Image 1 (spheres, rainbow, N blue to C red):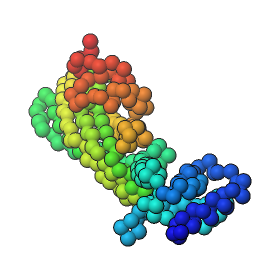
Image 2: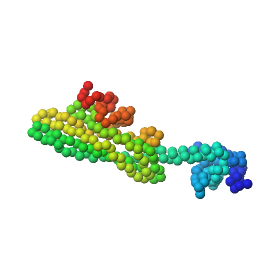
Image 3: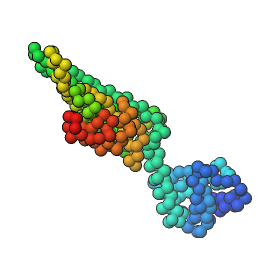
Image 4: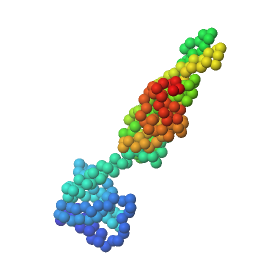
Length: 259
């Protein structure tokens, strides 16, 4: 009898005399070796030792862990255990809403006066948004996330009309205990003001929304400058640069003019 078969048989006897209930959060399975000996165990991990896979488990009511070669188990158990470990590792890298991410937004505005004469002042505004996202988790890296950054501008004469001036969407990993910087697409707009009347024409910055989705396409984190943007995620997730909307994003417009 091999050492591994002996461990399984001893574990069967120990299991028969215990009445401890399984923990709700533990993963239990009845595993069977190739001689037909079965036992219910608490699965701990699957690891590689000198090129071979080993399953680490605990017997009921015994703290000492055991490990046996995966090849000594039935084909069904081998397949299950490999899938179980792969899914467990994947879930460790899945971003969720309870993960603390710090999101810092900078708009990096620059202004240059392009034209002045005796009648008006024309100013151009240039923006280069950046978003810094910090993962404070010391142990986990969260992979294959998507960050969407949307910026809006409001017309200075036709108030209540927004233009989508910048849309950025990038696939990002969040390394453990690190920060990543996501650069948004640059945008610009102009304002024209008369020195002799109240005539004003152009655009001004109207805020942003940042949406983070995990690898399963679930929204986990949102940061915005306007609560109205968060209420219309259906619009924010599908809008394109150059589109026009009402201030609450409830209606799309054909242009910046009131209809």
